[in-house]
Structure formats: C-alpha cells, structure tokens
Image (cartoon, rainbow, N blue to C red; front, top):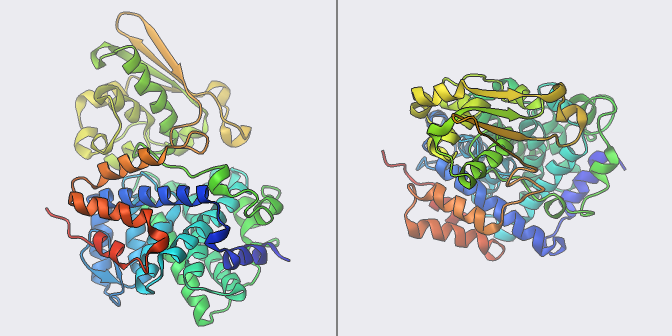
Length: 449
C-alpha cells in the first residue's frame, strides 16, 4: 500500500470515538486560539486588503468572511479568513479553521464532523512535517503553505465525506497547488500563504468530488511531494504513514500556540528577557545594551536587521528585544508602524547584538541550541537568563485557560462580551452542534471604524 493510500485511508476511516479525550480537548484549544487570532486580525492592513479584494470578486454567498459582514464562495472565504487569521503573526495552529468555517457553513456540517476534520487535518499535516528534515525550510520553502495545503485538503476531504480514491485524488490536486517561499516573510504575502493553503484544500477536495483526476500516489516516488519538497534522504515514509494514532500527534507533541504576535524564533529570547527584567526589577533606563545568543538559523528567518514597518518588525529580532525592554511586553500594541517609528525603540534596537556561537544552526544540528539573553546595565552590571522550549511550543504547551485568556484579549474590542463568550461556549460544545452556522454568523461581523 502506498504512502498516499495509507494517509487517505486514515482520513476516511477516522471517527471521533477513536480520538482520545485529551486529543479532543487540545484540538478545541487550537480552534479557540485560531478564532482569537482571526478576530484580532480583522483590523490589520493585510485583512483590509484581502477583504476588499474578496468582496470585489463576488461569488456565491455561501460562507462568511470574518469581520467582513458578507458571504462568498467557500474557497474565497477560506482564502480571506486564512489571511486574516495569520495577519498578526500569531500563526494559529495550521490553516485549518478557515476550511472548517467555510465548508462547515456552506455544507451545514454537524459539529462532530467538524471536529473530526480538524483532527484529521492536524494529524496529516503534523505527520508530514515531522517525517521530513528541516532542509526544506533551509532551502526556502515555507512549511505552513507547503504542508498546510495537505492538512487543509485532509480536513476538507473529511468534511465532504470523500472516499479513499477521491481523497487520493484530492491530495494529487493539492500537490500541484502547494508552495510558498520564506522570501515573503515580513510582508503581507506571508499571511496570504495561510489563506492560500486553506483555499487550496477546499479547491482540491471539491474538484476531486466532481471527478477531476490527478496522480493517485502524490506523496510517493522520485517526483512525489516528499522527494520534491524535502529532498532525497530527507524524509521517513514510515514515520509519516505508519504512525497515525500511534501516537496521536495532538497528544505526543500537542500544537504550537504563539503568545507573542511575531516570528516564532523570537519567542525564546522574549521568554528569557521579560522574566529577567521583572525578577531584577530592571527599568528600561538602566539598560545600556543587550546581547542575544541564538542559533544561526534565527537570522536566516528573521532577516531584517532593522525594522521599518510593523510587518518587518515581526521578523527583526533586535526590534522585538528592544520594544520588549521598553514596554515590558510584546503584544499587539508593540507591533504597529507608529511603535516601530519611535526613535527611542530604534535607538535601543541598534544596541541589541545577535550572536550565533560557532555559526551553528538548529537546521543542521537537528536539536535545540542554547538561547541566552544578557542585559548590560549602565552601572556595569550584567544580568543573563537562558531558556528552553518557548512558551506555547510543543515541549512547553499553554494550558487551555491560558489560551482562553489570549482569545478574550484578542476579541475584547471587536465582539460584545456576550458574543465573545457565546463563541467560546459553541467551541467547547462543538460535538453536540447540529451544524456550525451560528458560530460562522457570530464571526461575520462588521468592523466599526
């Protein structure tokens, strides 16, 4: 049996009763986090662009656009909502929520099947990513678009009840849709990557349902997905295809949730810096300079030595460090064009040194490298702190209560309190919902200027 068929059979055969309760709860946390990121993201410039563009394209009014107060076709809604959800760089777990909302609303899908689709999508994407080395990222591919397309396709196939041949066809179609380059990190196209992955999944699954043919073994062979994107010898088919449910990725590795709206590689330094300042009661005026010791791969992703815009700031480690020192936090308010333009922030960012000991990279080492932050104070004192896995990462997960707190903070200014809590209640009881149209309707709100 080919790798493609094994993956397709997992998607088709998956039933919620077979998913451990802990995995279901982690999945709900991921959905809550994605909802918060999307609600807050509606005010971003990228969200305004994609919403205007989507409205102008028209389309059958079947699925709502978050914060857009209008409906369009499922694929168009997913593309918009995926972009909106990733616009602040909170990067909710995988580009799955837009697929669930768009197809769930258009097809009037029961909540139980929606949760099954989320689990299917996250397990497929995670197994693919876990089964390949980091060389694909080093070569410039953006994994959230490449492998996110296949996670979105798995979720869409599950929602549409495709059979195994149809699901294999959907993966074949998706194989020619997948892409996305890290070159676009720090621009509005970066969140569009997530929107494209979400739309790709719906397009692939719906075309497969209509009978469009494709290669039935997209993941296999010399010119299959794994060989093309990962490279020869850089993937393990057994680890991908023969470990579904053994273990469940949702339990073994949980899912990544970002407490800060910036590049993931800035999170470990921020996790070290902020407690260090609080513990020693350091005021910004005391700080002369900062050293940040991280792996060389960080500067290959966070490519902006100086930030000129809010988008660039999310991929500028000196800026992230400087604004956190000055503000004592790294939230949505720290990543605005106005804050980036502040002379005091820029002056401190110029005194932040990023150091790569020995030029080592985690992409080459295959393991976590040290992360150390050193504060050099004006009185000659040096304070330092190191950290392990970033908060919200797989080895240091956020609790459900932490995720809910983040969600409420994201929704506070855009939804009424009763709407905020109703959305949360619907997700917590998703298995019992006859369909998810009420959830979609609560999100299709109009942004007040």
